[in-house]
Length: 124
Picture 1 (tube, one colour):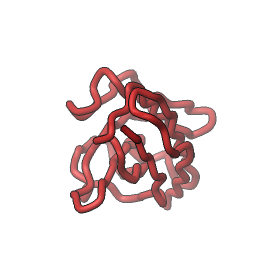
Picture 2 (tube, rainbow, N blue to C red; picture 1 turned 90 degrees about the vertical axis):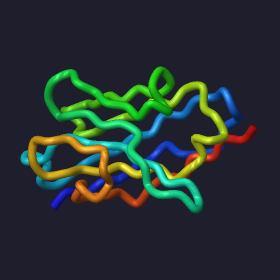
Picture 3 (tube, rainbow, N blue to C red; picture 1 turned 90 degrees about the horizontal axis):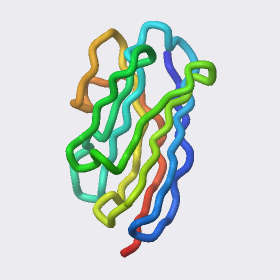
Picture 4 (spheres, rainbow, N blue to C red; picture 1 turned 180 degrees about the vertical axis):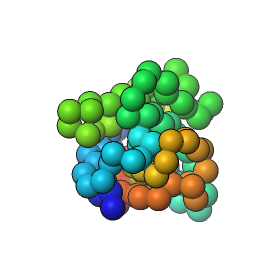
């Protein structure tokens, strides 16, 4: 089992920045890494970004490329999502997720463990 705890959400004006954190605990040794997803009211949950526990590869949704940066601190089992140039359409609940195995995915259903979510609201 893997436990995930997100933090760092809040209310920010358009153009502002926020940094989300996701701390993982439990059996993370056989997991891919961590991913960030978001869900806006009335919409499906969508992929935002993901990163492996090892290596340098990172992946982003087209809608956030150039504005969001994912990073990790392996010593703390923590992944961060730095969000800059925020737009009103970034408003959503942001979830951290972990998945078993070595392969990444952009499909929420392929991820096995989820945090409770943190609200990000961008005012225009």
